[in-house]
Length: 321
Image 1 (cartoon, rainbow, N blue to C red):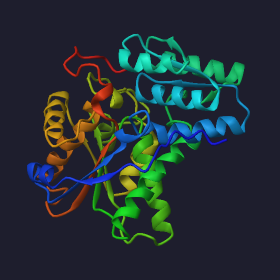
Image 2: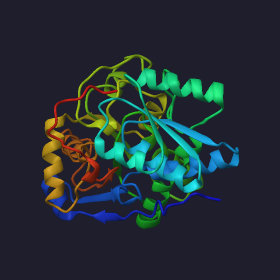
Image 3: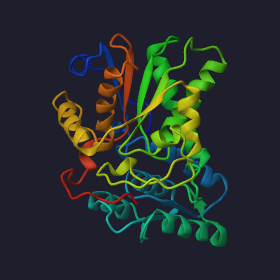
Image 4: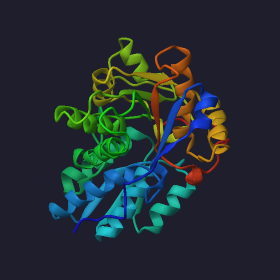
């Protein structure tokens, strides 16, 4: 059984009016919010849960405070597996309700490190199947699941052809998404199916990857505060650095105030995105201002999640977990 809920096949939408606002002629939105649970995480969950079934696991576990948890819970329910999501006390009640409605059990921990320690114990002592990272320093989510994100690249290729696009802007935390997109385009490039490799730009709410590219050790902790919960967190993975360097891309820091403005701008053009996704538009503006993206280049913004699950972007600042 492959536990599909109809993930993938999301639209790539031209947004010329939005492009004029940002100062670019060719802007497209890859709307991952149209996946079954509203984010790109569904592409990962489908393959990770399929692997759990192959291994005859009875319980899957993941550390998440948002989209990943809701997605894992839904796909585990589809497959008839038990599911445990390890979260933090400040979890958005909309995500909490979705996870519990799917029959998953929520376990609260104080922070990311404590979440990972709990996951590690259950994996090593009880043989539960891990869908997300539990190693510190982190390495990214279950690689069977991350492979599912390569399909974003394949879908872009199907629509844009061998010349594809010039740049792709990706909301990024521990970099499963940007790595999956990179790996998909690498697959296409190695088979001579594309004539050029898109530059990949990571968007983050405070300097983490940016600090590493400036010389910091990627294994250390990078503290900051943000309401962009889906790309919060104090850690960096090597896969982020590799994808950015190999694609000749870069990283842009977009703060919460800028992301909130861009969220309103996007909504007025028909795209209601999660705050973390909306930050990509702010990143595009910065990249054009700095000359890293030219106005005549074709650029895709990855809308990793829709805004309907967001509880209140004006809520008090939350410390990344």
